[in-house]
Image (cartoon, rainbow, N blue to C red):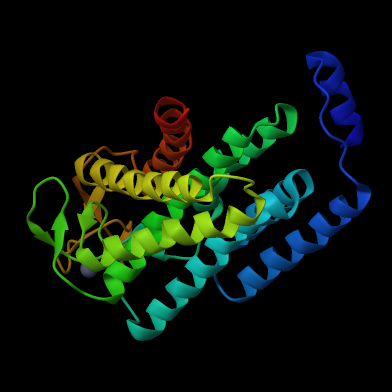
Length: 283
Ligand SMILES: [Zn+2]
């Protein structure tokens, strides 16, 4: 790893800040801890556990607590809310993402943020940190929106067609879900405030606004283009490929555009959008 850094340094002529060996050791221990515990509690599938290990190791060793805390806050709280929801409402979920997370789901949520952190290692910028936190705020808002929207069953509308849909389906919005999303975006913003030197209020505002706008974009893409399936047995529209123990068939949307692709697009949008509004409006 250190050899690799030495090489990149020479090629690009950039000085990455050296990582203390204690931080690498601590990153390794924490990455094992968080991936194993999450696997034990059924938050993750085996492939998801390996991906979380690699991602946590990269994030902590390159970014320390500053970059780890927002991601871990999102990850742990979201999983606890999902667990709580399953205790209250056991059984059927319509959304793909309510299952235990695998590699693609982990990358869809945290992949773009991790790329921003790696970029920051070479070109340090507080704007990259803002984009990182904002990208996590989008996926956190999106996750909490779905979980809390399903937990407190209120009227859920399709964001584009305004007709009533079942809570939990992609593209559906409800008052409770939107409040949950807002809470998620604020929680991620607050988890990073310790490392923000000035303009705490503006930072929180940009992150929370980006989180909500990003999750609305997620819902719009979800409603307009995401693949939805229909269960031939019970006729419910679902994102799952298997329902009532039978394979579902495509009902609407683009064949390859699943929930993971939509989440990744929304998370990337959030990162870029937060930089754009900060540059355009506040500076
Ligand atoms: Zn069914």
